[in-house]
Image (cartoon, rainbow, N blue to C red; front, side):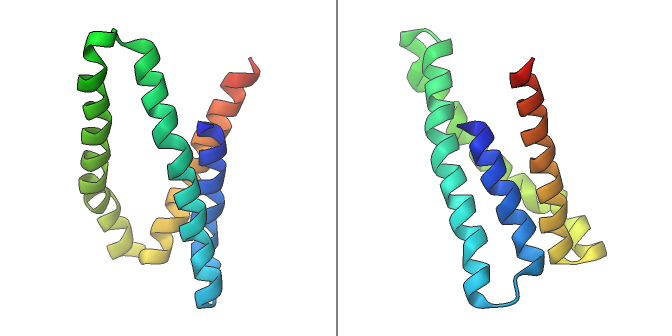
Length: 111
């Protein structure tokens, strides 16, 4: 499921720089949302399988915490990219990062 989400995110982030109308601009939002919908339950399932039953709540809260940390750090990490190359470049770089995750997890799965 995570690989499908990475693929949806890659396509969504790659569409942003070429979106030339409001209708086309909606597609990345939908694709990103679909990816989120796949990743969040998958991450929760991974946690439930890996930790003792008595600590599932604790580790589930860690997932939420790291999500918020990521939301906080995104402008810090991508701000310089936006300042130097524009907001469109942020989406291009992000598409590249997520595509790398997709390829890496696909290769790992093949082996």
